Length: 128
Image: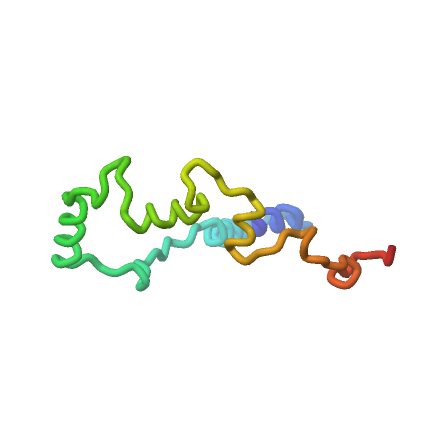
């Protein structure tokens, strides 16, 4: 497209008396250049080496996975999940944990508890 715009902008009719052979040659060269510039390149798609190729073994294991039963049915929990849920709820089923309890359990601090001076940690501070 750039070649078309450039050739159109730089086109000037011949100043000499009209010579059909010269004009035909220029038109042919210009048309060939335009056709070459506007031709799209072929797609060079290749299969990624990171994607493993399928094999009979992998196909069979995937089919077995597809047809297998779920480990836990909806509404059933594993023992590990029940223990984690009990720890998250503070051991009491009726008492939900607060945000402060969750932060303490995870070993985190809230922003107000961290005593962070913004002028020491943030470069945009204007020293107030």
